Amino acid sequence: MSSNPNKNSLYNKFTLKSTGSTPSGSKSSSSSTSNSIFSESNSLISKVAFLLLVIFGFIIALRLGIMLISVIFNRGQNPHLINGMVDATQSLVINQNPNVKGAKMVPRSINQSGGIEFTWSVWIYVNGIDSSGNRFNSSNAGVYRHIFSKGTDSFLSNGLNFPNNAPGLYLTPYKNELLLIMNTNEVINEEIRIPDIPLNKWVNVIIKCVNTTLDVYINGVITKSTNLSGVPKQNYGNVYVAMNGGFNGYISNLWYFSRALNSVDIQRIAFRGPTTKTNASNTSSSGLQLRFPNYLSLRWYFADSKNGYNP
Image (cartoon, rainbow, N blue to C red; front, side):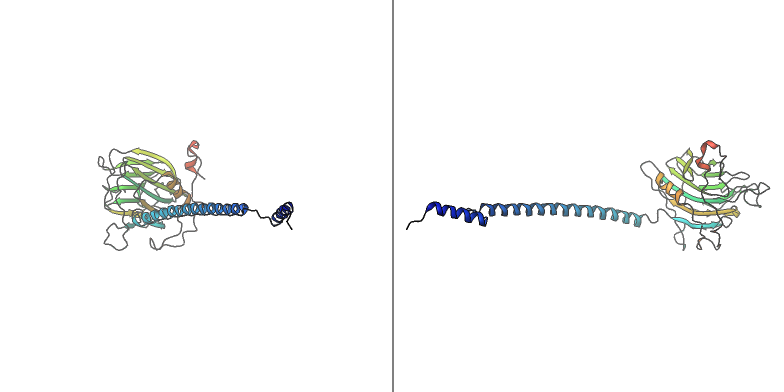
């Protein structure tokens, strides 16, 4: 008995349709190929993502390493000669002899592409002028009051150190004025005067030198810019603070940098303010950190008021 070919054909079609299979297995092959392509694409994306992660991690590690090396090798390039607050009537000598225990060395500036560079920063609090007009001290009336200087301790009768001031910062007698002196190779003492220094306020003074340009910043604002007659003359002398009785007030955070600070660095120092806590390593005085109002005077931010505003 012969089978019906049409019937077998219909049966085969029905069977294939119900089972979802094809005669040639083309759908199964296509599915396997798709899975393979998908796996390969995922693998490629994973490899690229991993490579980017490795590169990103390497960049971060490199930057951290450079920063760490910079900190290690520049640790002595930016010494904090005074950290904290000291009484400005008590003299301090910061020794520059490396053989002396406790010495804080001020490194000579390494010339940059634009010439010699260095920066000094100090906070001062001047109590004021007494009723007789003496400058911040009832004794030694009419003489300059010493804030700090680098060089020698050979002071003249007028209160100024001579000949070494690299730099030297003083208060002028009978007026609220700063006198900055810098030795150069052309002139022994070049003088820069900064008038109208606020009294009974913390004032930040930054002295920045780039080649023969000397800038003075008061509370983060550039106040004087002078072209010196020659290159500043550095020395290996000690740093002297508040000599000959100093002045009636306080000094905080005397820092040195063997480079020229940029505007961001200067603003950061002015924003942070002084340290009004007495450092026992600087002086034996204590209990002074509670005596001060808001540290920052606004006088230097009101140029149009002709110094008439001093909150």
